[in-house]
Length: 143
Image (cartoon, rainbow, N blue to C red; front, side, top):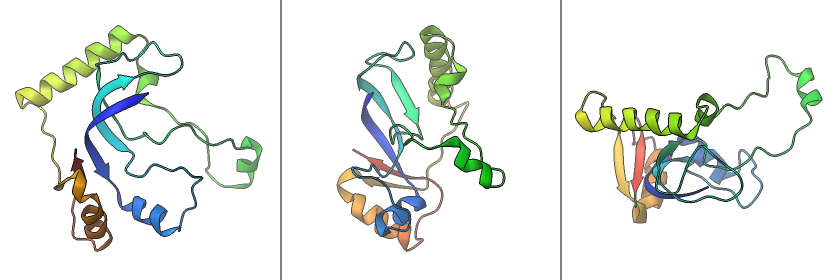
């Protein structure tokens, strides 16, 4: 799915990815929290449509292949990777729940707080401030 980003979250773990502490196969997308509008859909889906407003903290693509038997050696490690779409049976249910959430945000019944906002062109500054621990709460990049 292609999302036209309206806001992008910056997470401290992204600094670890950039520094190489956690190796990721390339190409790799940092700042995996995003909200915006669905601009395109590839593959098969009946849960979202072009033009839908969406938010996700899982915009990094599919999980790389792993042998589940390797996890048996670890303690308390499991594979479930649920996404919000797993809790919606149909597109209509997804649209209804999303609409309810966005209506509650717009009416002020639900407040969304952010720590610091940066323009997308200042993404490098956002990462530097994050590394220097100058930010608190959610850090958002605005395209």
